[in-house]
Length: 184
Image 1 (cartoon, rainbow, N blue to C red):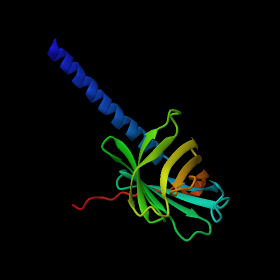
Image 2: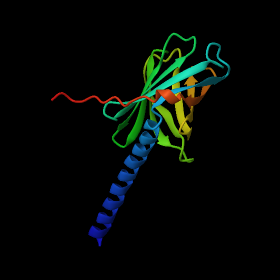
Image 3: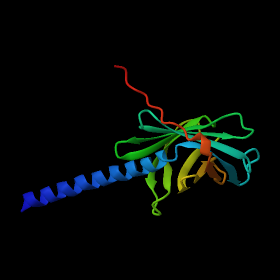
Image 4: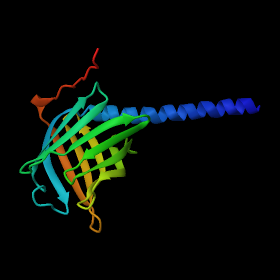
């Protein structure tokens, strides 16, 4: 009887691990489906001069033989383009944001209860945080040519700053997947 109970526990454990990997993979595949050039308007709370109401372009590119999704954002009038990399590590969907504040927040993602939105929460930050850091992010596909993103920026001792991007796919600019082939 004990052997049967142990075997049953082992099967349940294996199934739970497979489900977690499946959920992370499903979320990652959903995000990879957003590959393309997107354009929209940024809304910030509180309003941030230089960003709020500005046109934003987001470039999402599947790269590294499908193992990573690169997110690059360009805000009209801003001199930089923050880069974010999304990838699977084991049974987790991870995001590393290369922030213009000089740090690299690491976030873990999961599918929200709505089954559409993929949300990310910070679990560590590399680099200096005195000027603030990205704390949360979410991606919500609305239709094949429309998605929204939410980003939360934290500065110690101040209320969180939230950025909302309402983005539309630029029809003629669907980005190709970049495949990096290993040397033979």
